[in-house]
Length: 259
Image (cartoon, rainbow, N blue to C red; front, side):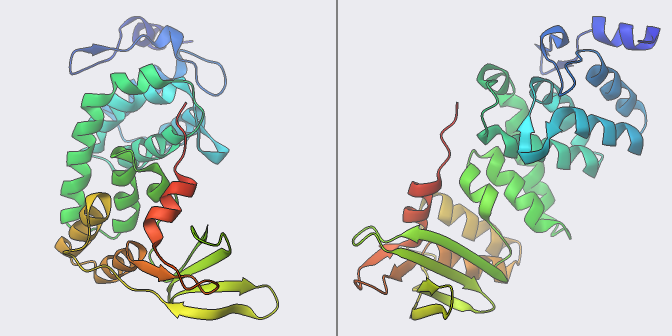
């Protein structure tokens, strides 16, 4: 470790008066000194190699976030105002917060920074960027809507699988170029006995669905808004003809349990 790295480790980073104790925040290699050193370097220069190493140290495959990831989150959010790399890495950490990371207290300490990140992402969405959907799902994660952040697509070829709440048959919900329907999936015949979805009107939407749809409409994302209206609309079961809310049933079956 260089003298500069030692100085970084001994001088705790600050964000909104919060002190980060790096000595108890290991990265995926078990190190406690490398992440603060990388963050200090990135405060000075937008170094691609440093960003790549930082990402490897904070998040493993399958979105497993290490304690140093939550320790770095306030600094990343501060940097996110000037570099897309920081915004994307902060978003990836928050998407991974649904996993079994064992860092609930560290994440709770980042509440003020996450609130600032939500505002930053919302401003970014208003600019209608080319990475709109990526920023949209990051904002969902920042709002702790982890199940939608994990599965929401651009509705060109999206499928959601759930059980009918009345007869328990497996139902495939399609929202995309192939149509917008509920069906029984047959691995030989494809989706059979299709029933058209009933999209929710803007007046019918509530809660998260209302926010998602309203944001997409505000930003001129017509395909996304239409897909969300169908996702939060109604489906008819092809087996028993019962009508149920698609989003309600999907969220009920797939909402992650935080630990």
